[in-house]
Length: 156
Image 1 (tube, one colour):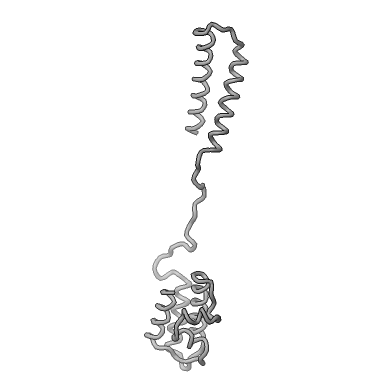
Image 2 (image 1 turned 30 degrees about the horizontal axis):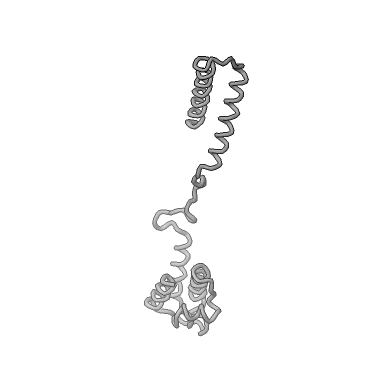
């Protein structure tokens, strides 16, 4: 709104100064409507040019991909935690934890390096601990093995 006030004030100042210049100083009789129309056209053309050449910042706001939630209410983290806890107390090991770790590793590799866990380059980046999860049969992982796998994925 301030820009329009400034522009209207500039137009009024231009009209008054043009009228004073032509009528009083130069003693030229001009049509007031024609002088006003000429001033409006010139100022409008100048405004259009000025608006097109002025650098403007983007007018959008980027919000977080996932909103922050209070401690203990993040469902995704709770699901991963329950998979880890179930793996640690299960009577016989299954592949659910290995599958989750491989999905996280694959997503991280694709996002950061454009590779997959199934490519030789991806396997080289993952390291032996995570590649064993991919190829070996299901086994119970210790807490330290799980922590090493998670840290390896974080450091990709």
